[in-house]
Image 1 (cartoon, helix red, strand yellow):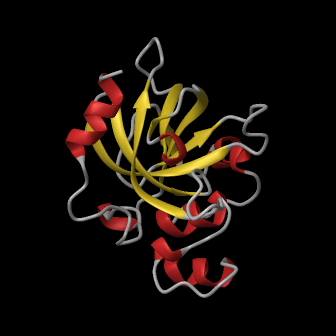
Image 2 (cartoon, one colour; image 1 turned 180 degrees about the vertical axis):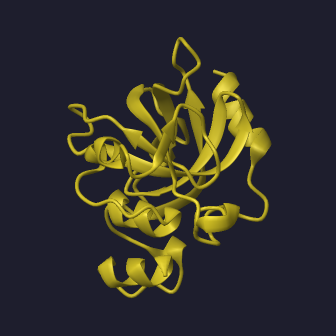
Length: 178
C-alpha cells in the first residue's frame, strides 16, 4: 500500500521507495504508513489525538522538523535505525543534492541529537553536499510513532526503510568526532 501510494505521487514511475524524487511529505507518508497531509511542520499538530507522539526515536517513527527560515515548510524524516541514545539514522527525501538536484531519497542518513536536555528537540543531519554532519542545528517537535494495528501489530513501514548493512561506525564518527 505504501509504495503504491508513493508511485502515484512521484513525478516519474519509481520501481522502489529509494528511486523516489520529490518532496519529503509524500515520501514520509509512504515510508512510515502515517497518513497525514499538508506541510511537514503541520504534521506534529495534526498527529495529536490520532497518533502516538514522543521524544525518542524508534524505527518507523517520523521526526517532525519545525518551520524555520531555512526550512519554511519544515521537514519530515523516517527513523530507519537507532544507533545509540543520541544518534539515529533516517531515510528521507529532498534533503541533500544528488546528481545536482534535490528531491532524491536517501537511506540510513546520520541524525544526531544536539539538544541540551537530550530530548531530540534539536538535531544535526548528515548532508551529502558537505560529506558530513551539516553545521546547522534544526529544531524539531518530536516523533510521531503511528497507530499500531489491532492485536499489538506494529505500524506498517516500507521494507526499504533501512539497508542491509548500515554504517553504524560512520554514523558514530560523524556524530562524535569533529
